[in-house]
Image 1 (cartoon, rainbow, N blue to C red):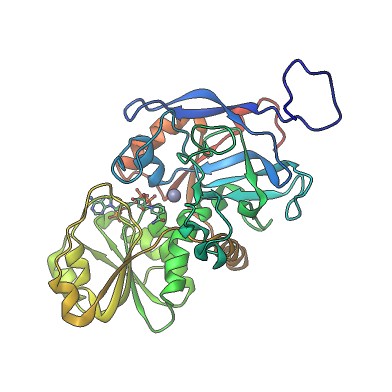
Image 2: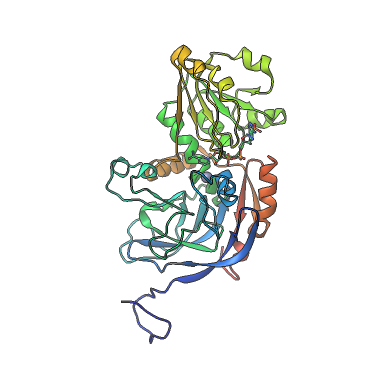
Length: 372
Ligand code: NAP
Ligand code: ZN
C-alpha cells in the first residue's frame, strides 16, 4: 500500500520518506552547503538513527572532490560520511538487535546480498552483489544514490547497525567504524603480534589508529612518516620508534627489518622504498587509496619473496569485535570536534595535514531542540 500526503490518518506507521537536513557537495569544487535530503520510512528490519557525530575520512574528501573518477565516480549532490554514531529513534517491527535510545554506529556499509561467499564469511565488504556503501552507491529504496552521515538522521538495515558500548566516548568512537576497522582488520588478518616489528606508514586518521592497535597487539611499532614534527605524538600514541621517510640514511638503517607494514598514505608515494624495509617473506598491505596508480618496481618484491597486498575496511562481525575490543582496552580516536557548519574549513585543514588526528562533525545544530 502506498500512502500519499492526502490520505486520512491511519494507525500504521507512515511509509512516506522524511525530509532531513544535510550538508552536500554539488560539484568537485563547490565545497559543502546546507541542503535537505530524503530518508526512507523504516521498513520492518530498519533502524532509524538520529546522528550525533560523524567523522571526516580522507575517503570522503576523495569522493566529494571526485578524485576517484576512474574507480568510483561521484554522483552529485554528494553527502559523504561513513563514521556515524547516533541514537536509535525508531525501529521496524522485526528489529531484534536494537531498540529506541540505544547508542549505535554505522560505518561504510549499509546493505549486501547476504548469500554470496563474502557475505557468508561475514566479509560483507567483499559482497559479489556488490555491497552497498553508505554514500554514493545506488539506493534501491529511493532511487538515486545513498547519502552518508553529514546529516541529521539515517535509516539502515539492522544487520549493518553496530552497538556502541557505554564506556566509549561517542565522538571519539565515530572514527572507529572506518579508520578503526580499516587498520584493525589487516593487522588481525596478517596476525600481527608480540615479537614482530610492524611499520605504520602515514600518521593521519587511519595511521594513528593503526599505531594504537599494533601497540595493543604487542608488536614493536614503528611510525614511518613524512612529518618529523609528529614524532612526539607518535610515541604518545604507542609507537616505539619513528622513521622520517624523507631521510634516506634513516630508512637504510631499517632495511630488511620489518615483518609487516601497513600503508595508510592518501597520495601517490614511493612504495619501493617501503618494500626495502621488509624482511624476507614480509608483507606490505596498503589501505591508503590515492586516485592515481602508484608505481611498483618488481625487483624489491622478487628479492626476499616479499608480498604486496590490499585490504578494504572490515565485515560487520569484525567491526563489532573491534568496537568491543576498544571499549575493553580504552582505545578510541584522537579527535577534534567541529560543528557541522565548519565542514569546509575541516576539509581545507585535512588537505594540509593539520588534524590531530581525526575531525568529527557535531550534528547538534541540524536539529533544533533535540535532546543529547
Ligand atoms: P589522512 O588523515 O589525511 O592521513 C593520511 C596521511 O598520509 C597523512 O597524515 C600523512 O602522514 C600521509 N601523507 C599524506 N600525503 C602524503 C604524501 N604525498 N606522501 C607521503 N605521505 C603522505 O587520511 P586518512 O583518513 O587516514 O585516509 C588515508 C587513506 O586511506 C585515504 O586515501 C583514504 O581514502 C584511504 N582509506 C582506505 C580505506 C580502505 O578500506 N582501504 C578505508 C578508509 C580510508 P605523515 O604526515 O605521517 O606522513
Ligand atoms: Zn573512511
